[in-house]
Image (cartoon, rainbow, N blue to C red; front, side):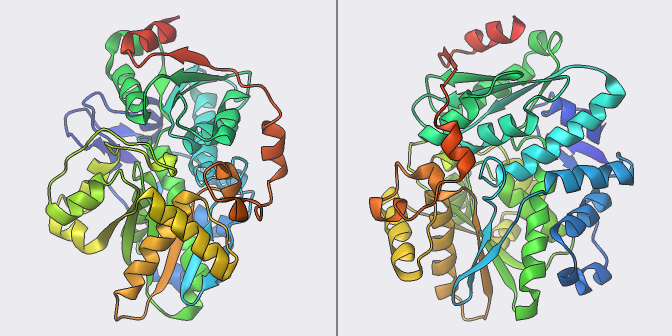
Length: 431
């Protein structure tokens, strides 16, 4: 797998180097030169395949850097949990990505990357340091995915007071190779600190840094798997699919775009966001204007400068009109989000986290404005039990807390408090 930087200055690399580097030195993002189209025969028979079989076919088409038997093991070991496709009502379906170890969609990318890194480390015999910023769910998924992995140290930066209680406990109650840095600031500060570290030659010359944020290509590849699976489960309906994706850093949407480029028949995508609406504003005006993030109840999407925007551009040939035709932007306030959580629960007895509710509302409004018959899929990206403190009591009381989340709430938080001054992070890394 040959990859280039979206800034076209850093040299091309293979998959192993892209995974270990995370970010090119020119501050671009790695993209594969070739995203192959899958044969028609795959789509003709896809409904007969399991999630693991579909995922292995997709991975095998993209990745030639890993022997097939090992790649199959990586894929099958990653996908050890169910991914239900639930008919909420009418032609609206929920793709539930919330049943993995951390109960968020990021389990797909984190678990796949952890296993891929372990394979590459068998060859290199080196230690790497995963440095990752989180607005909530990435940190817990990465912590779970890499926990106890040989040759890997993980440092997670998260904004103090801006993640849910359960999210914080998930990333601050592990020991061994996991360290949590509680940053006084917002997610954009955490993201800036991580990016600065990757571009700091003094740090990178002494510490083998890699990232598990969605800037890492190993996170994006497995996030394409479940789009194919949703199509397989709904193919019998015979209607074009549209996906509504809760969007913060846009890695999840990039996974869908990879699937689309590989031949998945998708009518279009909806980028559903909260008040941090830089991409919907871009799709309306053609002007990309990042801003400081604001805090919302859908905290995992509190991103004012999305990492993956250059990839959105690359996958649309850097054409605004092409992107606008393929992606519809939606934006909702906290009040609208809460209203949606309550209404869907009251009408359809379906409980959602705030992020999922935003995706549902974006989809429902989109379908109401379409004359064409479509099947709508919204991505359920986090278990509602992780957000009981921000959803109304009536909904919260109906949510069954998974046993592993109950256990994590009984553990003691351990974190290191730092300011958002880069020098403090640099000193920590160089120790």
